[in-house]
Image (cartoon, rainbow, N blue to C red):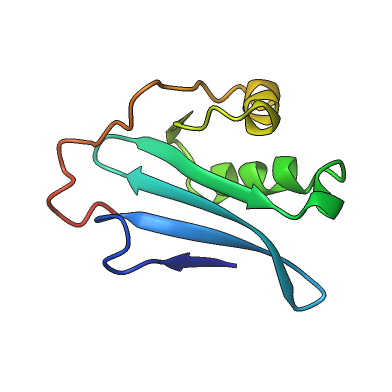
Length: 107
């Protein structure tokens, strides 16, 4: 389940909710800009019991299929997410890059 977060972290901020048996077990926060053809993963949480189940991989694959043609990056640096991002070939950037269209609606 994906939703736009109004006035949360800025324009284009989205949240993919990971649901199991009607319970939210994780979230992926991200921004997309279709004008720049880029997506940035800004936060990711996943309940401990689902960490080795492939749910993180399926969530990131879902983002790629939902937003085809975007180049994905991430600002995450925690070991558990870093390994997942490396497997998914999503590069990590050291700073939180804002696209030049951040002042406008980007999706």
